[in-house]
Length: 180
Image (tube, rainbow, N blue to C red; front, side, top):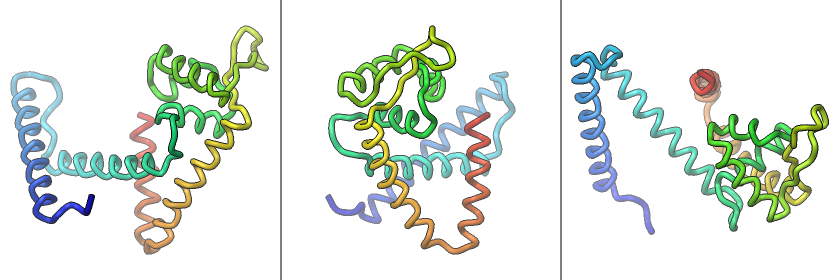
């Protein structure tokens, strides 16, 4: 399919703005009715909307650059985490992704069946089991990481020094928000 027409983009933007205004009105009503937090300034809400939208666009682009095949998003994320930080327990993986233990267990089981990870006794505590990427799993994660990083680094290289400085500060702030 071709690019979105400017009329379609304008319509989508108007629909998003109307939804945002309804959300603001509902939040204001809840605050007035004793629903907790004081109302948020509309400019702050707009900034939040724009940031969420921007992060989602970049995330979708990263996802589109992932290796194709039967491996889903969560499985690819687990492989990436294991190759970046080393062996982890199921609990550590679940905590990292903020998902239920059963969810991460299903993902790891699938990766194990595909020969991309294996379970090993933890080197520090023999009662625990660590999930370790196999050579094939590490290779998939590496190719995936190189592809995504190369795309992003090329985009950043084309920016001005001032824009890169702004993004450096924004990255620190967003990381702090994510860790909160």
